[in-house]
Image (tube, rainbow, N blue to C red):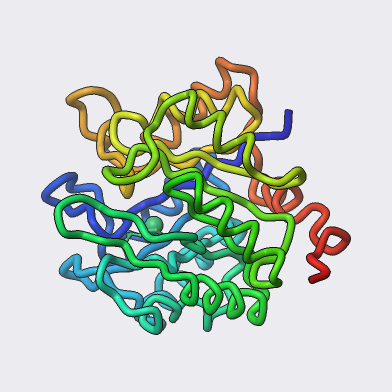
Length: 280
Ligand code: KMH
Ligand code: ZN
């Protein structure tokens, strides 16, 4: 099996210091958490940014400052800004980090209920616009899927030239309103992506480590972090994102899967890119 790519989703937009004091807001805190995760074995930092008081923002300058801080202290790690931002943000607001030409960014491929009246809106036109911008800026999308139909959407839009092949998917499982975090549904998603794709799995809340294990043994990759889960184990808050990364590293070791360095992650994610580029 390929080495395991671990993504650390260090802060997100919804989780706060009230949920877990280790959630980073400031540039310094984002730098600290990123370094700790990279040292623990993460090769990708999935990045949201906040103002110092914790308010989510997609401000380009704030992303530039966070990315500069991570690169200064951790030059090799892959930085993957979010274009999802927070519920209620406009498309224009959300797309700002793409102007910085990051190596990767998320591309959310469908609308999903987040519970109550909250709707995370990703219309087809938004996905086309984000995908087109990513191609223009040379950004590799991580295709975020909260349900199986989002894989089909990504495949359709890829055939129309809005997303380049081979695609890298993130199965986000266990969101209230999205696909459940079960082994059956994981197999359904895994079997639905095109040959030559890569994928990572994100289990929300208590499903973080069960989904990590399923993905580790299935040849997929793993995302963990406070964005998705604040507990190291039942009733025990993670003291840092690095606690969560270290736990995945321990699980992978037990299960015989080696951990990818950032450069090895680049080889895995960008392999076949030129010769499999979509022809229209
Ligand atoms: N915060 C959610 C509304 C992404 O990063 O692309 C969207 C999200 C997905 O976290
Ligand atoms: Zn995110």
